[in-house]
Length: 148
Image (cartoon, rainbow, N blue to C red; front, top):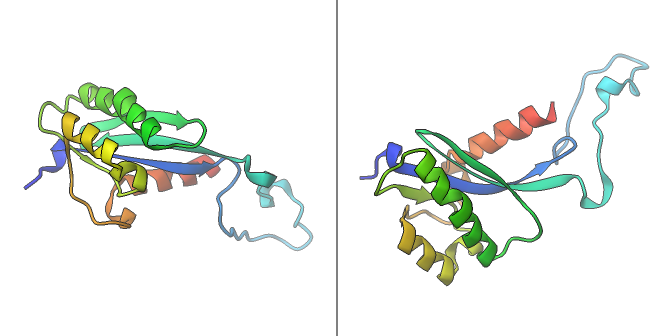
């Protein structure tokens, strides 16, 4: 059985720079529709978001990395080498730590699986089950706190 303290959870997520990508309701007084506190700024044509990669364990948070451009399998392996492994060392994960990530195609590509097998263990994980990974709660907090 895998102990929580040996797990290093990682994921990437899109963060909206202006507000959140969903409907937002506000209570307003009559004739106050244009009051600045009732308006959420937006950016048209997709320039209002960033993509981040991050990780954490029971021992703390690891590195946060801004992803520039479109991520492919090669870029994902580079991120793992430059940010996941140093995070594991900084968090003093020791030997035998286990990585948990979702089964996004870039994570399950043959070259990525080989890279991961060489560097650490990976938790077997059902496809399309992001709600089971606690890092999703951290992303939610970042989105809520970042939008206020």
